[in-house]
Length: 115
Image (tube, rainbow, N blue to C red; front, side, top):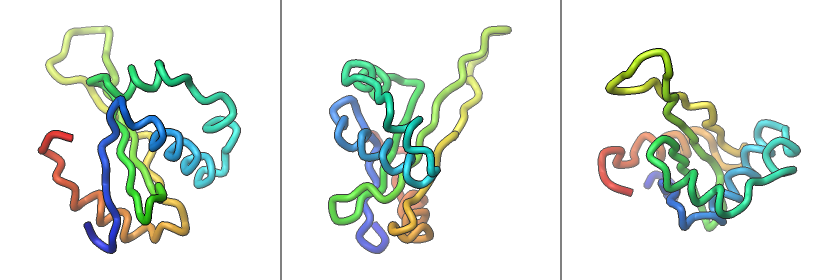
């Protein structure tokens, strides 16, 4: 990846990286309490990361999470749909993570291959 950044699609086994992503989001959004004060338990995170309606990705450099992206599928109730709308509520890069280089790493990720 560009400039030594590695992008990873998190799976149910990546609890440490998910914890690091929550910490990074808390720092970058300047809202540590919502992201770190009441972290979900391991079972909840495993179910979430293993589901087909949530995705979390991290950019890692030198063993440190420097950026992340989260997205989820919004299942609608008013009518059946083939595809539900999605939302990408979180994409942030820690200031020490060189935001432009991290963004390039995410754009360079092979989006249509299995994680």
